[in-house]
Length: 396
Image (cartoon, rainbow, N blue to C red; front, side, top):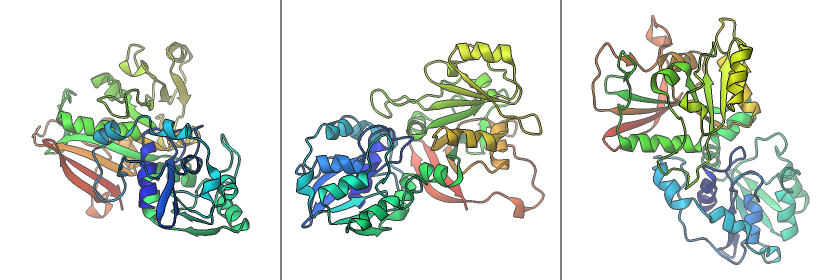
């Protein structure tokens, strides 16, 4: 199953909106075939493994970003993405030789017709004798149906091997299926004294190039990148994936701008070179038409204070099949996301530099009168990245 998780991680940057899934076929203690799911509409991991029977294990040893220390995603993507998924899809079908084998799959095989036929049917047709699954699929369209179909066909089924690791690899997919909204990471680049920009808004660059490349790995695995109108005005970011992460032509996440009064300039860099969704609180038909002509999409989601309803925005992203969101914003939007309990995980890059009392902080979510009201997190990763320090923390 550990090998199946390694294979599943090859879809880290490409599988969305589908889950990342790997499959290993074993007979007499030896791997006879393996596969993973590359992208939506492509063959699923089980089908690729069945097609690759006889090829044995591939030579690439890919460590998935689950448990322990997060790998350097930039190096991971450069070394391990490419033709792997495409090559498996072109392998000759050889299902009959999987008869009697054990299939190790990181996610319950689907039992319904979607873009591709049911994988449970393919395993039954191939004659596998046992299926070991890391976790049940949280998708209500599957939700145990695949396992039930396998058992009804007389195949021995076990579920739960390395389940925590499998959930971690698909943390966004699980979040979307179980609560209707994506997993949101809040990325902050800060000084040693917790400042994110000078008083005049200047922030490029607090952290070094290694930290910025590392952050692009998190961008590449995200389905959407979220920022606010203040950051767009101050930094004019492209908010895209680059620096060699995600292959030669990386998938570009949806860019999402929180802009309550629809103040974004049509010349903003974020509107070029990819899809952009602008969330506002007040409809401005003429400005909206101008932005739509540039390829942007506008959604009006007001809350009772005349601001963008952030929980409603996340629900909207969930309906669009967005699994993982990374927010890169300023202290106001950061504070709003924290205050409204929209954040699941913090990614903090801290540089050995001091900016002083007048500089801008990490987040403005109000003044606390007692420590009991503090937002407490659990550190899950802490390590140097170049000259800076990386901290990954989750709310307990």
